[in-house]
Length: 531
Image (cartoon, rainbow, N blue to C red; front, side, top):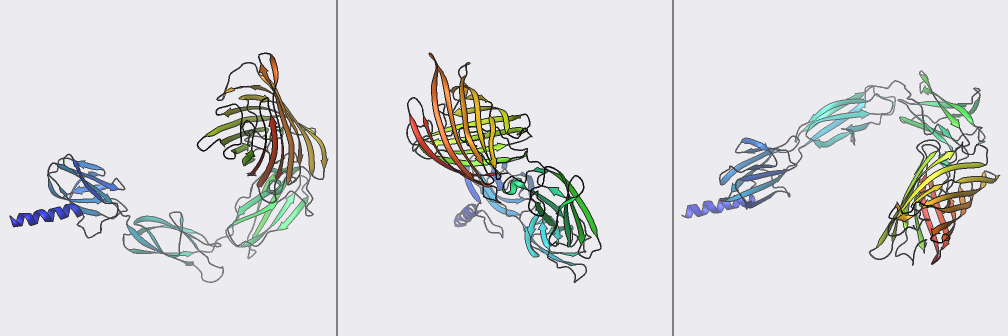
């Protein structure tokens, strides 16, 4: 009887601590009893082979209802992980669930690298194991097969497979040969640009790769083959080379519109190898990239869309907030309404814009509004040098209402923006904007009437190289049973700063609005990028 009590106590201890191998229990290991019969085996990660009493019974997660009560030896195995073993004591009339954490098996890869011929070039190797940057010397890796790559500037890179056994150290030695001098294809960040655009927008960046030390000379030739710009690049000290051309001659004077050939003649440091590369770009003064207000879902001034479009591939992102009593507010908002706007030109003469706006109206209330627009140029932009025309469609949605803190809120609007240049002076210009439109109103983003009402937006825009400013206004004539009635009148002034050579834009604005019932003043600030 005493022996039976001792045995029972031992089995209870085994069941409580069930892990009896030489390994220590892992923090995620679990064991518990539930209604049912047999044994449930789970592992982290799953998919491990599960052996019970040295017989493979399947892969985890696994339920074995046919096991009799009593002790059973468990072993789970998975490639890349250490084996786990345990003894589980299944109680009579219960199901025992066992969860075991698998630990990734580790090994060491010792990477050695040196030049095949000592001396000569400076040797600074870079090590990559399975595409991830590693170290010269010992690297702890998961047990199994790995790809090891070693490269050094001026040497031919090598890649080979290496097997790391669990708990063991494997040495992989590389002897890199001196690289032949090679130059990759010349690429351009822009194939069309305008030197009169601000900062990074008025230039193109050219890049190419080299395999070994050397130097290069850049020459820019016009359509007649004459060299209009030339420069020597710094000596090569790494694989990736780049240079920027601002579309100017050697005296920083912008070159005329036309196609230009960019040539790079590169030579090895020992002078025994030489290669050439070229790419064509176009200077086009009709390309104009200027930051605009995007927070209302269309590009332009705050209350007046512009006819000028971004060139293909260019984009702008803007984050803005307004303070005070923006349009449509019965009182000051609980928190400043914020908007995230985006515009992008996928093709020449087309531009899409979108904005999402959130206005907090109290401690636990908020209002969402959004806008989308699609705009296309009518005729070539600024073809006659003074007038730009466009056609656009804009859709707006405002939750619980038909207005937005960032502009008027017709549900659907067809516009025809026009932009007339009034004066040009010292790289800046003053333009007049006008955008008549037809609007269909409704609630929750759905037009409710077939008959549209007219609206008009307009303003003055001043555009310089690193500063833009504007004054815009909008009026509406909404339909009533008795005919048309005056809608809201909105006005805003704004200023944008575009400090070179960055692509960042900083803005500030001030506005007012009035309708039949309410009026208000507001101010705002924003920042973003244009590229």
